[in-house]
Amino acid sequence: PEMRLIRPHPEFRFVATGNTNGAGDDTGLYSSTVVQDAATFERFGIVERVTYMSQEEEMAILQSKVGCSKRHAKELIRFASEIRENAFPTEVSLTIGPRVLINIGKIGVRRGSMKKGIEVAYANRLPETERAAALSIAGRLISD
Image (cartoon, rainbow, N blue to C red; front, side, top):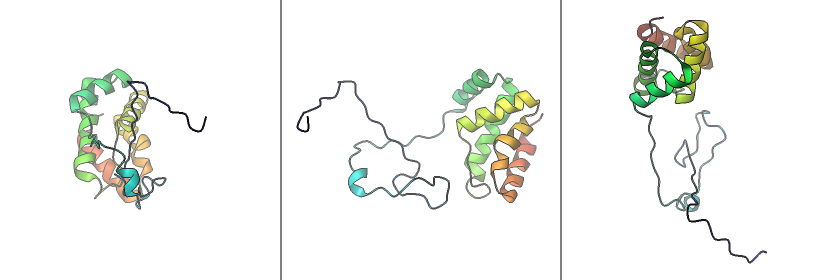
């Protein structure tokens, strides 16, 4: 068995992800990551940079997963975009991914307030000054 050759299926694919691009993390956001050595990193012939999905795609996902109105979906996407493009990492140390945005929307629908969804699914994770900054942005962009 030690000397056997295993041939992969023609459709076999191996995919790895890395939030730190092999550099490790000393911010604490991705605490279980480590610096990847060059030999490991070089074994991946293709490195693809993945950005956030388009606003149209995010809108469709929010409306299908959350069941919120088009207006609320647009406002949540505007809020997430503001955090991603302008506030992170200078005002807030945590960005907003699609999973968090869906949680914000679900809680917002259940509680009748997208601002409440932002508070409990996102802002309460932040240190106090960052929390205030995030809630201030929500106050400007979200109309409950």
